[in-house]
Length: 158
Length: 158
DNA sequence: GTAATTGCAAACGCTTTGCAGCGCC
DNA sequence: GGCGCTGCAAAGCGTTTGCAATTAC
Image 1: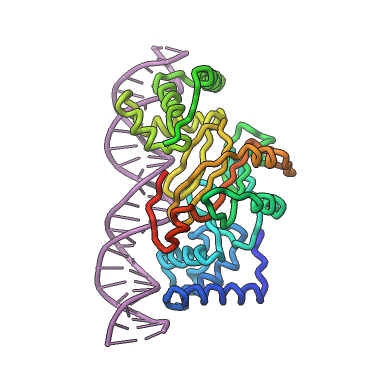
Image 2: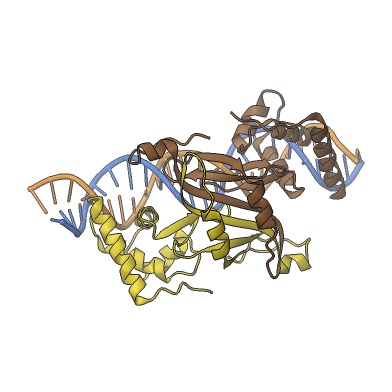
């Protein structure tokens, strides 16, 4: 499973960013919040709340509500981004990453490919009355496995 | 509310497409299925299952299950497309339409803008081991209303 | 000390499912 | 006439909410 490659200095930088954001909103720096940030940086490129929760469970005592709550904070301060790739649940990724999502219409598999060129192209677009923060590109079609056997319904594999 | 402009000839063409698809799968041409197609063509650019259901309710006796079922068929045969713009529910639009979604991070409002240039650019991209059907671009940021009062939480509209 | 935060469990809302009866082919 | 489709109601499941207990500041 592809993982994020977050080195020590980026990790510290993000922790600092988060701490600053929390303070700026007069909120509290609880151990749960920093534990969740740490775990979020260790997830694979895409992860959902449940994956993070299962991962953190053994190590700390943290409830699902707190995970939801904290992940939202991490999105607000631009450390994570939330994507809706299918209807079952939202997935999150590091805001640093710039990739496109190739989504199989047949089996639901999501693959990430480098999207730095496309991101640059899109960031050049301006829209009246709208201030862009970031953009997200989803490309739908058939993955190689489903192209080979187009009639079969297959299980999603992330 | 912006509506789709589906003229008589397009309507008939899509009805034919749907009928052909249904026959090709050895399924039945029920009145419910065609009623739902008709109503889908009358919706605004984006609509969700509930909007279509509420709209069709007075005129025909059709259950929610049938609406879900039929809308999925319409996606399979490329008349509609399903988008996940937020976590509460999927929205649908005519596959013919090519537009980008401007999504406000603050209030959740979704605005459609012409995306034919971007669509053309993206359709030029090829990916190893992936056969593209269509692509979807979501641009996140702040709408003009929320830019003016960036601290307020507002109700989604659309 | 005290107000924000947490954990728990219940509530919520969209979607899916099971099944008896209906109706298209 | 048989089998697929429909409608209904219940179940499913990710997410949100309410509240008492905890804890950061």
